[in-house]
Image (tube, rainbow, N blue to C red; front, side):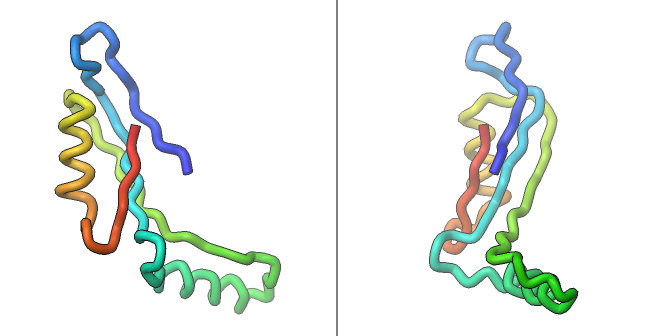
Length: 88
């Protein structure tokens, strides 16, 4: 998975202008969406697909530090019980 955001290196604290946040189910959590999509692919007669992972992707823009992005990603976009997020 690729996660991107742009750094404004001229500003102390590495303020960012845009970020990409990816949210996925934690390991061991049943991914019903992915399993349904895998079945849909197989219904098309395509048997070679072994695995599907459902990942929610959010692109945000503004002026924020890495610490604030972490707070946004973890507190707003992620269910801490069943999901994990990545960003950078």
